[in-house]
Amino acid sequence: MTVAQFIAKQTRLGKRYAKGVLRRGEVFLNESRITDGSKDLGKFDQLKVAGKIIQSHVPRYLLLHKPVGILSANSDPTHRTVVDLIREPWARELHIAGRLDRATTGLVILTNDSTFSESLTQPEHKVPKTYHVDTEHSITGEAIAAFRGGMSFAKEKIRTHPALVIQLSENSCRLTIFEGKHHQIKRMFLRFGIRVTKLHRESIGPYVLPSDLAAGDYITFAKPLPK
Ligand code: URA
Image (tube, rainbow, N blue to C red; front, side):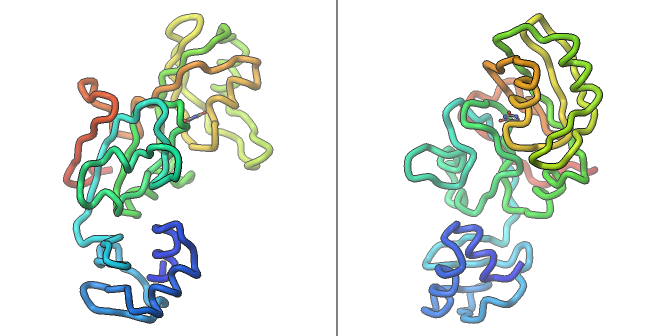
């Protein structure tokens, strides 16, 4: 990704903003002012835009226990976001490796290492994501069989990888999926007229939400676990 593309994406202010800050001399790559945004940005090149470091030399990795009502976004004019919960000077450099709906709780991974986040989110890696699901209606054998068999999603033109399901009670289960499509679990259940009332992500691949991590808290870790 070029410097200009990264500025547009990370600030969410678009290409025009990126061109403007470059033209005005407000962009510093590894402490040197640059005006040409076509240069490729290295993973840990430091990039400072309009006085703020938007990518630093230091890789950052963080597990957050997302509470209900918090938006999986970097910033938002009306709602608090997962990044707003991070009390670190470098919080604004982070991006989210797999979003959760506002009402969903549980594990969110944040990082400034795009190779790491892509290794967790790109569909071809088929990283398992495990959720505790509570439902209003009984979870039927028909629904479980369909989840285990894989389901077609016409909008995304995909067939899901066979999910793992452990039924915990008539109205709850532990479900592992291998994609991360918009509202995927709610849509899977709704296909069978079953409304999800609570959704909580317990793990993403080898990363497990620590049981003693309170909602709203986070821990940092030094480097990704070996594959
Ligand atoms: N599936 C959903 O429906 N919502 C989430 O937040 C995550 C998976």
